[in-house]
Image (cartoon, rainbow, N blue to C red; front, side, top):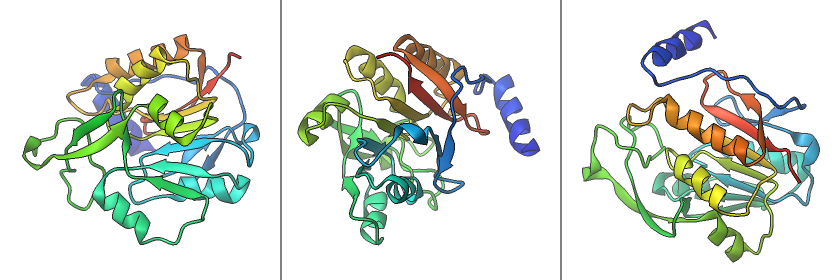
Length: 230
């Protein structure tokens, strides 16, 4: 923990991190592995909950933990070839439904840059040192489009680990009438091309839409929000 805080302090000085406290007091618990897990308000979930989980990578422990506890279907989304291949090689519960496209503020295709470390799986919409030469074009859809195609009128839990696309998606959420009851977001302000202010602005936007912040991870990257308005 001490080393992690030290790293965050360095990023803070450089303008790539910030510290914020939750303002929504509620009971929550962690679902999933140390690497792929998230804090969740479990008491408002049930077998009939609609769950969208964007960004699977090579760790579906979060999705599986929800299925094991509540028995609901988890609609998981990831367009990156390595993640798709990994999922196909796993024995996952029947309630785990994979869709091979990502989330954005438009319907179409988006360039995803590969990770600098070839051992990592996450592609990003943010610029990396490898440049666009190795970027791949992958399908993405708006949340409104996805809900219409899947026949859903609400979302009870929306997880977004979408590698930089979260900022435009938050803005698009504000332009729609969609208000997921629970929203889990990984922000990527640690990237030099992003910076802390962009995440601050996104959090301010979510609060203006009626969301309270109930959880912040020790890394300062994962945030849990609960919609507090009917």
